[in-house]
Length: 331
Image (cartoon, rainbow, N blue to C red; front, side, top):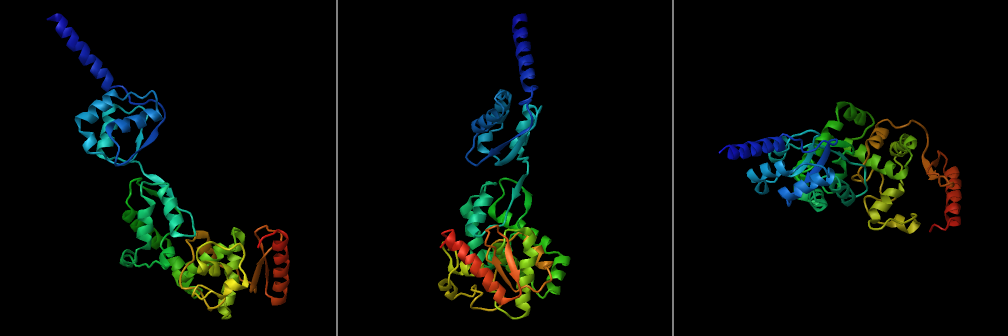
C-alpha cells in the first residue's frame, strides 16, 4: 500500500514539475500558424526556434483541448519563461502578436500584391483579384484606374492572418486619415483635387529617384499646367504603352493614342500611373516655386536632371544626353 502511495506521489510530483517548467527559457520568439497546421507541426515550429524547448506538457494540454480541430492561425510570441498552460491558452485563445506590414510604392497592382503577400498570410492572387475587381472597387469608392490612389505606402501594424478584404478596408481608412484637412486644404490652394495631386505625384516619382528633386519636378509640371502647356512626361507614355518598358522613349512611342499620353493630350492624365510614396505627394503639395519648364536627365547618368526655362537650352541638354546614351550603347 505504502509503495502504491509512494508511486502515485512520485507521479504527481513529476507531473507537477513537468507542468511548472517553462516551455522555453531562451529569448522571446515568434511562430506562424497556417490553416493546415496541427498540434504536432506547431510543436515542431517551437522546437525549430528553441531546440531545448520542453513541449511534452504543452502537447498534453493541446491534445486534451482537441487543438487539431480548432487551429487558430496567426503570429504568436512564445515568451521566455511562459508555462505550458500559458502557451496553450495563447494558442487556443488566438491571442496573436501583431506584425509590421511595410508597404512601399510600386508600379503595378501585381507588384503591390506580391510585396504584401510576402509579409502576411494573404495569398497575392486574392489581393490582385480585389484590386482589379470593378464591382468590389466601386463598393468602396474606387475604380481599377484610380486604385493607385487607394493605398498610402507606410508601415502598418496588422495581424498576420488578416484577410484581403479586412486589409483593404484598413488601407482605405489609412488613406482617408492621410488626406486630413490640412492636406486637403493645401491641394485646394494649388487648384488640385487629392486624386490629381496623387496623379502628378505618380509622374514625378517616375521622373526622378532623387528626393531633393521631387519638389523641383513638381514645380516644373505645375508651371506647365498653369501655362496650359502639355506635360510631355515620358513616364505617362511608357504607362500608355503597357507591357515591357522601353529603355528609352522614341518618337514612335509618342504617337500612342491614349488619354495617358501627355504628349498628345493636355493636362493631367485621368488617374495615377503607379502607387505613390507620401514624400512625392507632399512634394506636390509643397512644390518649389521657380520658372523651369523643361528637364532632361544629366549626361553623367547620376540620376539628376538639368532644368531650364529655355527651349533652346533644353534642346542642347537633350542632345548631350542622347549622345551619352548612344555612346553607352543604350538604344
